[in-house]
Image (cartoon, rainbow, N blue to C red; front, side, top):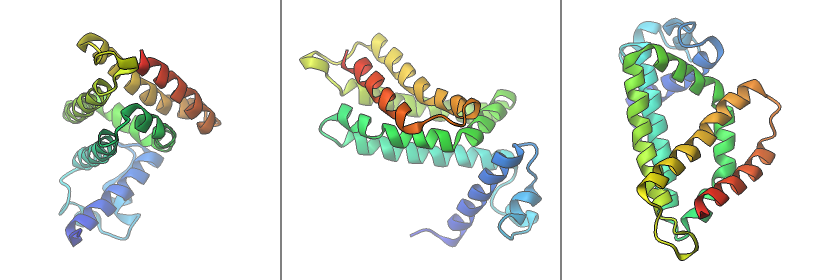
Length: 192
């Protein structure tokens, strides 16, 4: 069960996400965030000490959600099939979150504290994804060597990260077509 305080924190994060999408991190004020769901700006400070703290909480919430998705895949007998089954959802999520995630990365490029949070969470996800890939044993062969594993993990993550930029540059991108081709690329890469 979610506490009232945790529910309020989630509401603030959701409101802030929308404001950051519309106005950017520096363009969105605490009062704008507060106004978007009927709270005073001063009251937000009871939950978050700054906009930077809000971004850090967003990053951590995204990490928790990513770890849940990875755990579901890890629990499957056929990891590759399970991974391929999540491609369309992953494509859609990257497209829908392109503005917000790009804003967070832009802030990470300027702000060492946000950068440290982004890099730490990426490291956790990268390790979990590498573990998934290591669990795929193509054509009866042993698990991929560590060098190939790191490269495959980087490429797999870059494919999804790149969709954020493509969604901004090409808002007419066809998610279903991208998903179909991406499944084929991932299957080919991970089976070899």
